[in-house]
Every structure is written in structure tokens, then in C-alpha cells.
Length: 221
Length: 262
Image (tube, rainbow over all chains, first blue to last red; front, side, top):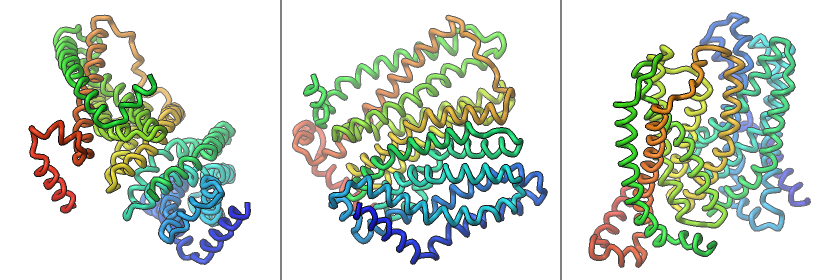
């Protein structure tokens, strides 16, 4: 427990001290969303129709950008080897690391999303659905994405490869999240979609730590 | 029994098995492909609605089914490799991956050419088409992850994890895409409905499926033999087996040159 807490605090402190690096994916997120009205046209009806999808696609892309940080520094400075040697099981450390990463990367995204909902003329119901799907979906992205990060951490140019590996896997999440927002725009209930995303999340939280730990061992060789 | 199965983890035993199976697969594949395709394209009755253009089914359906089948085979091999640490399982995995990717591409390509006269469009975001496209991306992901590593043992393990993540995802993707499609599109052109196929059309199709399956097996076996020799070039059993046939020294030097050039 002590070990897990210290990993948590260490990652929190490291992320806080590298605020510039935290900001970059966030700015990318805002910029991508700014491009859409410019490309498609400023009419509020169109923007409202595509808004949920645009925010979700931009969120996935920007999360992919920030994801590389998850194990990179630990791999470079040898902390990862120490985690493997420590008596605390690696998969528990991995859960803490993924959770910390999610906390430091998603909270800013939440804070900025009212602004984006305003940009894209989302209604209040759509906004609520967007927040709920982001809340359930982004940890899923972090946990499943961490498998890809763990596999590519030892490669020199893993960034693009990471996106190639992960984007097909996020397609179901994207489908359910955007359909929840669309249902909200028509004032229909969207509990089923939320329930499915939550099921996917629980499934991935249960299984992916094992896969992440194994992948890290493979990368460490 | 278990010991006997486990003995195929050794490259030389796996190579021997490949040798034995290769000719059988070659014979069955050639025979059933020739029979199935000639029967299907030449002699089966033409469809009363689609005319002769339905005949592309004899290429399209086998490749579509086996694209999925090859992925499952690849994932099972990955599981065996990860759990029991079989080197040969990873070799099989990477031997079948490009074959499956090509099958997926063939099914998309023929589907597109079938879609043009039937639906009037080359591509439509139908549930099946979309999930097949995603399957192609999953294949390419596994292959590109494998090629990204220098150390092939490590590459096999990494690509194996990806293959297993993919195989868990395939049903989820399929289900979600189907749901998405019914939500967004409803009844459009794709409701062709599968008419229960006539027996004269069914037999050649079945033979074609067998032919494609054994053809995939054949190509995979040849690729796997290649892979085993490449990896075990420095082992004594390779020298013993091929000592009289190939100039091993030259082959080794050649391989070193290639590695130096990379």
C-alpha cells in the first residue's frame, strides 16, 4: 500500500511539474475543434448535429498524444525495472499509474469542455450526455490504451504506431458515446449506451492490468 | 498426448510437421480450387435476379469467412505462445498474419466490385463492410507492431498481445457497428436479404471455401518453414538437414549483410 501511494504521489508531482506537457494535448484538443466550424461552416444546426462526434474524435486523438508519457520516463530512467523487482505486484502499480495519468489528463479536459460545448452549440441535454460519456469512456481509453503504450514504450518512434494500434480498438466506444449524445439531442433516454460503456469499462479494468504488466515485461525484455 | 503436442514447440519437429502437411494441403487446395471455381463460374446456374454477376460470391464469401477465421487462428497461436512459451507458435502467428490481411483485402475488393452493379455504389457504410475494414486495420496493426521490433522473439510476444486484444474486440466491434448502422441508416439498400441458396449454387461455394482454407494453410506452411529456417539458421539441425543442399556459410553471411544494411 505504501508503495502504491508513493507511486501515486510521485506521478502526481511529476505531472504537475511538467505542466507544459499537460497543456499541449489540451491545446491540440481545442484547436482540432476550432478547425471544424472553419471547415464545415458556422451554421449552428450543422455544428449541433456533428458536435458530439467532433468532440469525441478530438478527445480520442488528443488523449493518444498525451498517452505516450504514461510509461516513457519510467522506462527511460529505469524506474520500471525497479517496479518489476519490487514485492508489490506490477499490475497493481500499473493500475495506480494509469489512474494517475487519467486524473492529470482528463480533469483539464472536463474543465474546458463547457467552452467547447458552447462553441459547437450543444444543447444542455447533449452537454450532460457528453460529460457522462466522457466520464465513463476516458478511463476506458486510458486502460486499453496503456496496453498499446506498454507495447511500444521501448520503440524509438512509437507515436504513430501507437495510434495505428489503438484507433481501431476505440471504435466501439466512439459509436456508443456519440449515439448517446445523439439520443440526448432528441430528448430520448440514453441509459443503454451508458450501461454498455460502463460494462466495457469494467471489463477493461478487470483484464487490461494483466495485459499491461505482461507487455511492460516484454518491452523490458 | 500432452507431451506429444508439446514436442511441436521445437522448431525441428514443427518443421517436420510442416513438411508432412505441405503436400496434402497443396493437393487439396489445388484440386478444390480448380473444381470449385470452374464449377461455380462456368456451370452453376445464374441467379434469376443478379444474373451472372452473382458468381463473384465464389471468391467473395470464402475470403470473407476465412479472413475472420485466419484472425482467430492467429490469436489462438498467440495465446499458445504466451501461455506455454512456444517459439513456433509465434512463428505461425506471423506466418498467417499477412495471408489473413490479404484475404480481408480480397473480400473488401470483391465486395466493392459486387456492390457496384448490385447496389449502385462502390462503398457503403454497411455493418459488415465496416467491421471487415476494421479487421483489416487490426491485421495491419499486428503486422506493423511485429516489424517495429528488432528482436523477433520480443516482436512475437508484443504482436501476440495485440492479436489477443484484437480478438476480444472483434465481437464488440461487430456488435457495435451493427447497432450503429441500424441506428443511423435503417432500411436502405443493404436489405438484400439472403435468399436461401439453391443446392447447385451451394456445392461449388462449399468446395471453394475448402479450397480457400487449404490454400491459406498451404501458404502459411510455406511461410512458416521459411520463418523457422531464417530464425534457426545457426542451429546444428538446420546445417545437418541442409548441409548438402545449400551453402550455409554464404547464407549466413548474406543475412548478416542484410542486417548490417538495415
